[in-house]
Amino acid sequence: MGHLNLPASKRSPRQWRLLDLVSAAFFGIVIVFFLLVFTPLGDSLAASGRQALLLSTNADPRQRHRLVALVELGQHQQPIEACPVDAVDHMPCEDPRRNSQLSREMNFYRERHCPLPEETPLCLIPPPNGYKIPVQWPDSLHKIWHSNMPHNKIADRKGHQGWMKLEGPHFIFPGGGTMFPDGAIQYIEKLGQYIPISDGVLRTALDMGCGVASFGGYLLSKDILAMSFAPRDSHKSQIQFALERGIPAFVAMLGTRRLPFPAFSFDLVHCSRCLIPFTAYNATYFLEVDRLLRPGGYLVISGPPVQWTNQDKEWADLQGVARALCYELIAVDGNTAVWKKPAGDSCLPNQNEFGLELCDESDDPSDAWYYNLKKCMSRTSSVKGEYAVGMISKWPERLTKAPARATLMRNGIDVFEADTRRWVRRVAYYKSSLNLKLGTPAVRNVMDMNAFFGGFAAALKSDVVWVMNVVPARKPSTLSVIFDRGLIGVYHDWCEPFSTYPRSYDFIHVTGIESLIKHPGSTKNSCNLVDLMVEMDRMLRPEGTVLVRDSPEVIEKVARIAHAVRWTASIHEKEPESHGREKILVATKTFWTLPSASN
Image 1: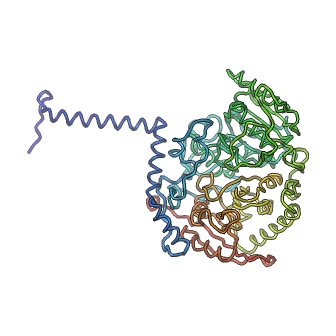
Image 2 (image 1 turned 45 degrees about the vertical axis):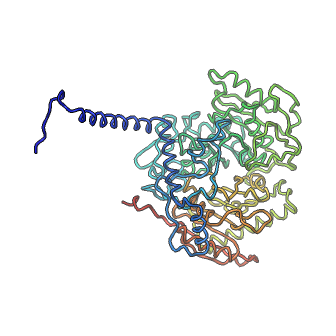
Image 3 (image 1 turned 180 degrees about the vertical axis):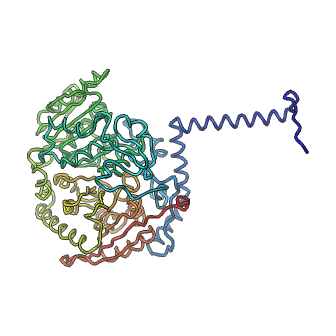
């Protein structure tokens, strides 16, 4: 039967209702499209959808507990399942859906907030579709594969400032920044007029709100090792880009808590348009910078409020706080200000316009794991020994000289020297006998999960690598010694995920892996090895390497779990000179993809 074309005036009321519904649906789709693409709601909904997908995996805590037990016993025959495709960049402690429900005061919601283990899906993060083995260093400083993180927002918004550009299959990094669009090299040369950039006096730097970390990347040629950090913000992936480039970086927010570093660790603190309100909350953020900066160290603030339009009061307040803390203003060059921190803390008056005062003598300024910011100036006199810039040895001599802060441990100098010799011997054995990629261009980003004095990192001094030295928060605080050596690292509790993107590291090293999950002074576990190794897999790049050193019993358990996380593993004897009861597991992460990604 043919269709009857009626004049519009003769269409039935039922047909009008149908047309109205179709039209309403169409315009509704258009409105939703604009909301998703052009407003923050799109990000929020995307995060909610990702979380829903993630929670669909092992949603039942009892099922999750049974799965963990089976994997530990080697009775789970299949590999742990893959997470959904939307989880390719998932960071459990920086989940925007979870954090968006928290307080905005002092940016608390942008700090790390971790789910409970039973709320965390037990699944393996897949690589994105089209993922390639990363460009090797030093080429990676200038270009990376677009397919490894196909996020164009920074290139679109900051390309004109020289941050990064999309060219063919690569993101290109010209080396610029908002405050140095002509390039980091020229900017660093300008700073060299006021601070000792090139003679080994400065070694450790903190780059706050780093963007894609070009400043830290180009400092490396000056033998200055910068720890770059930024929060997971609307640009989403700036730290991910930095790590893909081979530049030291991690995700962090200066909000309500101290940053996870010991006191007086950095020779240089740098902010290039980091937009941190240093004088807000009674100068709490400036006081945190002061806690981290060595006596005699340098603070560089480039951008607002330094001689910035309509920010005269903020600029005056910043100078006032610096004067109250007796910082010497070295130079104001355009919108860049350079200060030098004094060697002592006795000049701070009890009362001043900002109400600043010294912290109580009972305060340990190196307590920094989930430790709230304090509105007082950390006492340099609370830390004994020579660690001021100009007093501590220059780089590279400081790498092997026992720092004064090693004496905080009983027989610390002897322990330090023995540990240094031990790791020189061990690393030589690893390279000669275990068929590792250490010392080759395939390894750039390295993590030591249980770093102690940083001996493993120090033994890699001839390799073109950087090492994230992690000192577990439950263990003795030796991180200050690592910084005094001219190395970098953070505090962390390994019963929580690390603040980094997936696929950040080429090589992960851990000695005493089971000790990372123990209650201090107890044989009981705070968490389990399965979750820890799934987290290691999240951080490790495809075809990356893991080296675990522990007792034979623990290594056997690690080998069973390695199979479940899709690693190929082999077990080796320790080096002949060692008298310890240990074995070594070397594992490689296989390069697998989701079935849909291969079509």
